[in-house]
Image (cartoon, rainbow, N blue to C red):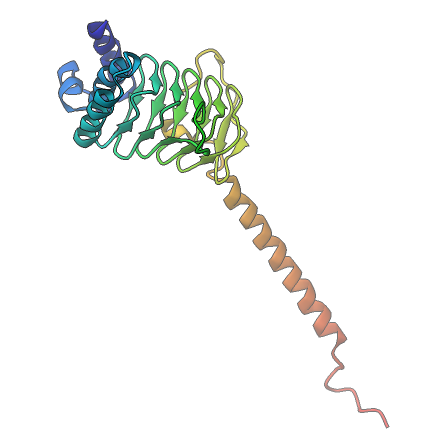
Length: 231
């Protein structure tokens, strides 16, 4: 099983990362792969109810890779953690197969109560750099979460969300919905970068128009300088 995990994960890196030039390079130089290897050991100890050893192994993995994965988290197959520094995955988080996440992604909880409190990530999801997915919510299969998005509500299958708080945006139709195109950092090139910025620009335009109207009204209401003063 361990050999199969390594082989298919390395193949996934080679297929999706153009910087990966050889299997040996991925095995020796990719901290995301190393973090997943440490997690597999820590998770096995956790499932055996060896909680303290599991936490110790997870802490060693964090110190060596800069990626923090709680040993209780469930991670699927062919998961890629690109760059990886600053990634945090909480105890009850569940990550599906073929998920691609970038550095500084957080799968965090919003409750101090025990039980399910971290996100569930579907299959073939992309989580852009700095994305924060918080709470016991589900991100559907083939969804895209843009860089630095803060997701507080469930995201449907095939949807793309960006911004703070994250909002859905339109995507160009895909020729094969079962195998959507890879969107680097979870943000399609044809999409608006941030709906919040779009809203701000709209407000600025409305404010400028309002100022111009007030200026015209003020000018019209003033008496003409050349008019003689009344008796």
